[in-house]
Length: 400
Image 1: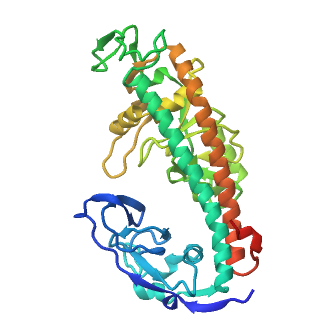
Image 2: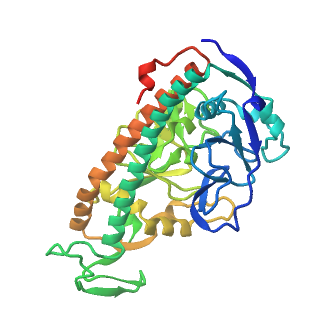
Image 3: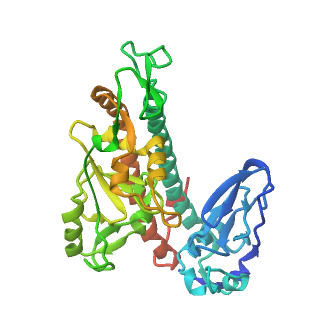
């Protein structure tokens, strides 16, 4: 494939973002270095644009093809679409290591000239559009799966809240308990009313086993091997970002396993920094394990795993755990603090009933996450081949 060399300055005009604080809320996204921050009633630009970091995380290049606003730590671009496909350019630039162009002395930063001097090698515009079409279809499927997962997760959390916070679980007649006049009694320890016949407990009454992973400091060395070392930054939403994990060899994995003893049904729960990020293990963890910054929680035998996961993901437990954490700069939750959280003691039959309701939701989330991982792997393996001309796109593959 014939490739033509350009300076980035020949393809784009870089524009500064602007302050958004005085803008009323609305429908247009405001992009910051970390993603969408809020929605406002005005936009800076309404054409496809690659959004380039000015400060902060230089690798987080973003893209928008709808009207948007950017803050002053993020540039937006006006793109010459006669020479380059906006989405192709976005994917091309994401492959580059921007850290080597850092012009900052403290916080990573990029100037106009740092970007403008980048060399870009492009095929003809028709080939770019075909490649962009394939990549956008893959990304659209990934985005759809994530949206489905967000909806399924919201459904499960809403059901938990409805049953065990508002106490409108189904009564013997299948009607909402509290709303239908179910008896409530004051619990002094919990400082709230709970259903008659229920009682209080501590979280350890639900936990069969709690441990954590292993710090590599004196135990092993990271950076080699084919196994994944999962840290807090790897826990994203309901899944693990495998591309954001360190690697470890088989000997290191064995050492971590001897401590964490991960198995199907366990819940990973982050305990340092952002408290309460969770991951539900639904497949045998054969080639990965966790750092010391997360707990491994296993439910007691009489507590259904699906209920246990729903409880740990609930807003109430998340807030309690965050409040129990210590420290102001780097927050830390210790095991004893988590285990001693005061909570309601939910009857066994009710836990089983809830688990039966949410189990299909959690399994579908897991299947969607697997498909996202497979699609991401395929896309990321295909990208450099397409971008450097080692592979081409058949015409029919990019057709709608």
